[in-house]
Length: 170
Image: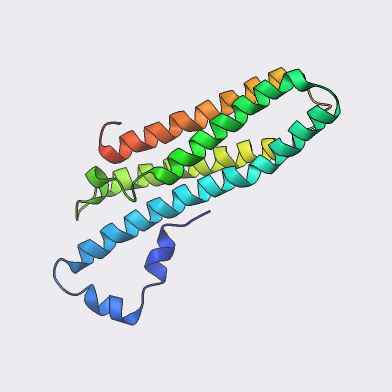
């Protein structure tokens, strides 16, 4: 899981000198926020992509068991996963309404980071569930409905995150 503080810990000698130039410090901090945002979203998208292997295995098991009717629900899960992964990757690097200010409300920044931690946990839980799907579980249609509901929840949190970053949310 990416740690926004790691940027501050890995600054070089030249950068520490540049930070003394008036206005440059704010520019660097803005860039670090953008990079942290990008790293967080990339981690989430990569984790979702990785978890699709579990869905693929489950779908092969369904086919092997002759449960072809269950494939439509699994394809719906895959489509939703692809959509969420693409939204996470496609977001512009840093939200201009949030990251363009030299001074950022540190309280809001802390709220966004807390929100991201919750999203990391939700994505890790979703990915773990996808990776551990088994044919002997409940009805495949119910499994698909449950997975879509979990994806919906992560999507709602991602939208909320965007609202927080653009100043729309509270």
